[in-house]
Length: 295
Length: 191
Image (cartoon, rainbow over all chains, first blue to last red; front, side):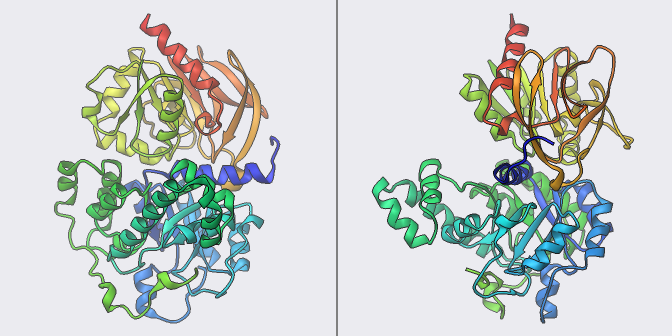
């Protein structure tokens, strides 16, 4: 079908992320939750055995989910299905590719399998999304073949402070590169440990070469609107939905908040009577900082 | 020329960029109040059709957009947009705008691994680069629907009066020929 080259495969993978923009990607652990998410307006779902808040509570090593469980979710919905593998665990990624997952999240939410190397994502046909705390991390993941980026935030906390910090940090560094003289870009590439071409792209376009979502700690429509106003192109919501009192209502409200993120009047309506939000933990109270995993 | 781009979810910014480069003015449609001004054409972009269909209903956009399309407003629909326009969606009960007499099959090429790139002849336009991303295709086209392009024997572009609908994404291809053709449709209606 057509003339398929590796380059066009990477382009198609980046373009799938473009189609997700302005949308909400929701963590789900069962086919029933996946259906609720789809009906509430999720543009994709992330299939995983335990949501980050429960991974955090349970402790221990967390790994890729059971393929049978992921397949159950693939059969339940028509929207794209994503799944997580451990950082550096290319064998888990191969398994996810074999079951035709739509997007792999090489994720710090799971226990890292490699403390030096991330997966060489250029070796895969399926697309990858990766977390980043700053521009250097984002560009290194893109160099390795990621076709979508998200902030790391601090998953499973219901605390948005880290996602905000990571998004602001990326914006600040992008602005700095835009304001550089062209002859300063070479040194900047060394500093960020990425290729000159990527730095030049950011300099010329004032943005990442791939879509950038917010993730980690988003729990309310207001959180989602905050991240969109800070420049996120869409939002991942993990524990925030199915750890809350009324998942269906909250999920639908967050979807609408992302579409009309600047309309405070509508946001006020959407925020009414959503029931209990997830309890959450402040960043000072957590023992394990997942965002520190992978550089 | 003032083109409204449905901006509830998906790749709407890419359409705007392309239309602006061709000299058209664009505005985003996110809620009912956005429909109050002049509109010479409408774009329904790529994205997730389930999400867009739901938001069209809940934001009160479905009925006014249906009326505008029925009264002849030129519309360019790509991928999810084609699904929004289709009269019938294969294997599903519901429909969204339902103004285009075709049956469309969603995710017709499978999951993301089935996404592909092709080049094919499009009637009235010429050779067009086509990016198919978890794309639908037209299973059957009703009477009066002109088939503009086929790839591997599947219908991937149709026109029915004021409605131009494609299963691929010209907005990410870097090739403006489809958008140029659409703007001509809008111009012809104004005159």
